[in-house]
Image 1 (spheres, rainbow, N blue to C red):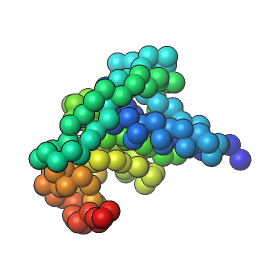
Image 2: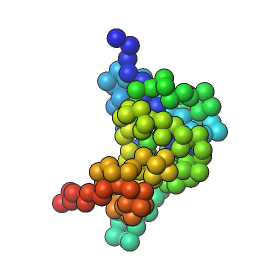
Image 3: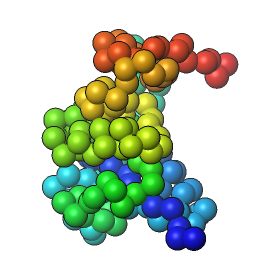
Image 4: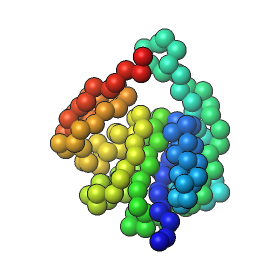
Length: 160
């Protein structure tokens, strides 16, 4: 059986751990992962960020590292992949403005293929009209956007 293939769509200031950890972990299990970003090709990179909750009303962030892309966005065909990973951070905010990214997310959603989302990346599901009547939880400030897109909100569980 051929190894599973996963598409990871990143962008500048994606949350560092939400891009790198799934990228490396999936590869560790023998999954072929293609990391892409609109307007970039294999060998280019995205700048990541790390977010800290430090007693403020919202998180702050610092620069992460250069996350090297291993595939070219313009060459991606959703039908070639078994699943989609969408890191959070600030990147999803502007990725919702990219028609092709939204089309890819919609394609994965309508095909029933798994989509892993983190933190703010659920806004991409909202942009792709992929939340109607689905149960979802997320970083709480994203909740109103998801509810407006038709999701059934589930309160996040406390880690305390």
